[in-house]
Structure formats: C-alpha cells, structure tokens
Length: 281
Image (cartoon, rainbow, N blue to C red):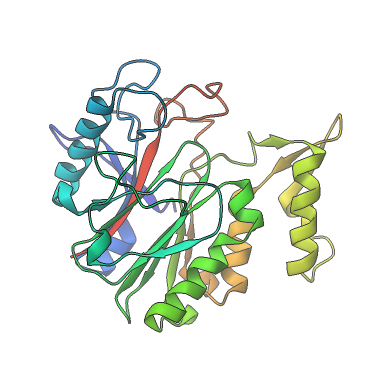
C-alpha cells in the first residue's frame, strides 16, 4: 500500500501525508507537498517552496505560508536550510526555530539532515527528484528529516541521521520508524559510469551479497545504468538497525508524475521544489 496519501481540502493545497504514522501517533504531522495550490508562475507553477530557483521570493514565502496554514502549524515554526548534497546533520533546537522560512540568508547553512526533540518545531527540506527520508522515534519522541540525492545517498546520510538521533536523544534503531518519500524512480533515473562507479564502491563497502548491485544498478546500452535510489536508501536504513517492518517506501516517481510533482531532470532543471516536513505537537 502506498504510504503517502494524497489529501485535498477546500482552500488548501493538495498534500501527501504519511497517513499511517499520523493515525498511529497523535500529534505527529509528516508529509510532502505537490506542485499545486500556490501562487508561483511558470515554470515554477504553482506551489514552489524553493527560494533558490530564481522564483519571486514573495511568491515562495506565500506558498510556504499556505503549507503552514494547511497543516495547522504556525509559519514561525517552519525551519529551512541551505542544502548542499552532503551528510552533515543539524540538531534543531528552540534557537533554530523558524530559521530560513522567509530568506536564504537566515537559513541553517550547509546541512542536509535535521533532527529534533522540540515540540512545535517543523523541520523542512526541499526536493525535486532527490529522496526525502523521514524518521520518527515514538519512544524518545524525536523526529528527523534528510535530503538524499545520489551524492548524499553515497555518503550514507540515512545512517548518519539515525546515528545522530541515537547520539543526541538516545534513540534506538529498533524503535525508529522510517519512510522514503516521492522521488525519481529507477524507471526514470539514468546515470553514467562516473556516478555508477561511486555507487558500486559504496555497495561493495556496505553489502555482503555479491549480486545486490544488480538490484540497485540496472545496466543499459551505451555504458549507462538505471539507479534505484529508493532501494539503496532502504537498504542503508535497514543496515543501520531499523526493522524492515518499520520502513515505508513510496511508489511515487517525481519524473513520471510531473502532473503532481516538480522534476529537475524531467523539466530540464528549470522548475520548482516540493517541501517535505515533519513536526511533533
């Protein structure tokens, strides 16, 4: 069953919620925006949440405010970062609350993973094909969110986030729930040998099954490969100690579904960004 459920409400943008988590854990809000329900104009139409793509800053802030209103959280609680395709994690405290919500200059700098125990704090990250990774520990009441493109995946930001939750909050992997959100699928993500060689290297260092690379890298003509980023991240999450029954994986491909999502690759690099969020109240 698809873990990200599309919900439409009158006068609000359509959103993709992790419905099973929110039903099981009252006070938790987690999900992913679509490209609809905002004010941005083409090629960012219409719910672009990224300030870094040369859209009108006024439009982007209005879109972010619409997201806040839709999920019933104050805009002042939304916290954004300047993402750099790395694996560094920020422990988000009350001091960082609201950073980056209205300007890039005031965002958390050079981070791609975020964890918190703060109630009322909304962690946000931006996507347009890269893989959103959601984490929630119902025992310690801690949440995490990570941005995993191919570079962050190869750096194993998934494990870095889980380890950071353990070190900062005492979260045990067996208690943590993880979800892999809408992103470019193996159906659409073709890469060259340069990227494939780095993926092969990380698989060799982290996986004991000799044929596992064939599940992640599917050979194509002309020395190309199809890359399954969702599966590679799922495997890293499981190897970090999270039970397979606690891992949700989407079937939604951003490149296949540009009617609902922005896709950097499909749309030639000129497009908007979706926001992933997770919050505890």
